[in-house]
Length: 113
Length: 112
Image (cartoon, rainbow over all chains, first blue to last red):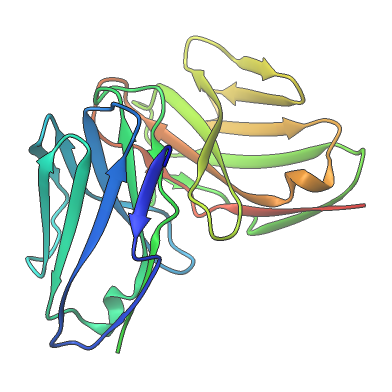
């Protein structure tokens, strides 16, 4: 595998379910990000991790819980989501925080029923 | 409030012609700008960038222009090819900060 991978690619869950999104980067980067893209809205930054420590939390509801066990893996744990949380969730990585560019995974399309 | 705006949701251009995608921003502190390209079912991929010390950056068929006084940047693709059909996002940041601010994207269709 190369680049940034995300699993699952599609997820349908009920409001009472607990699920997790997984992201893995094979680029040797040390910063990772979660973004949310809702229909007709710009990408919204949710969380930033640098060297496995969270450095940014953009007022994200606690029903989203990130985890970064090492510099290659990033999880987003989901619990009691709402239908308005349905969106494309994109993971990205970069070498350093003040990086020229971020490398994105293909995203997980989440539908909350 | 959106700090980066792409006011054209879609654009159609004939193959071989120039495609011009526009982006406006409101935060005068932004000093680094990027364009990303996104195909369906894939994540955005970096295309080209420009820092505020320049007003133009060129890479092959792609040129980005920055007008700081107007808080406007544009991406020119010449000549346009059918493989350029994708959604293009502009993004802006303050160098050294953790966050890129993205526009909503413009869907470009290049007609053969």
